[in-house]
Image (cartoon, rainbow, N blue to C red; front, side, top):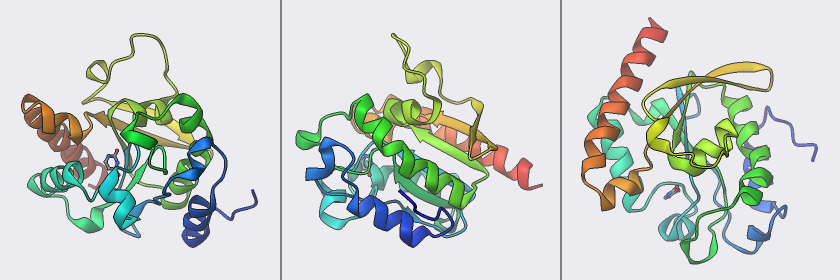
Length: 194
Ligand code: URA
């Protein structure tokens, strides 16, 4: 594809028209948020509400995520939210490596366009898209709360992982961990901005 990475409208359009993997049959949801984000947040894939509204993280887990971000002092202008996989998998199934790999081009373009201060991966699917670590036994609990480096388009970025907010909908003990991780992220960004 010859999409110009310097044009977000073209990136969105390429997502909406994408036919690269079997999920092409399902609703396509591009990223959304600040036009000058410090943070680029990556989730798994759109859910039912996201597919209905055409926007990422606007359902129950999105509400929780936005509340957590607000609680630690982030404003809407601070972040852009997208998903590792842009189409809603049937029956709310977890996307596979094929879907993650085929969708990576869109995520890479969003990162290269926005050049955020930090990229935040929520849960395992986002981690697989960002870190390419698919070793057996890979668990987000071993990875979360820590900063890593990864290169996109020749630029090295700080990457940070935490649990997917949906995990906190089922397991309340994860709420405190996600909040604590987001506080760590806030301090990191404040230090980086100076
Ligand atoms: N979960 C995700 O991973 N992404 C969304 O957009 C909504 C729920």
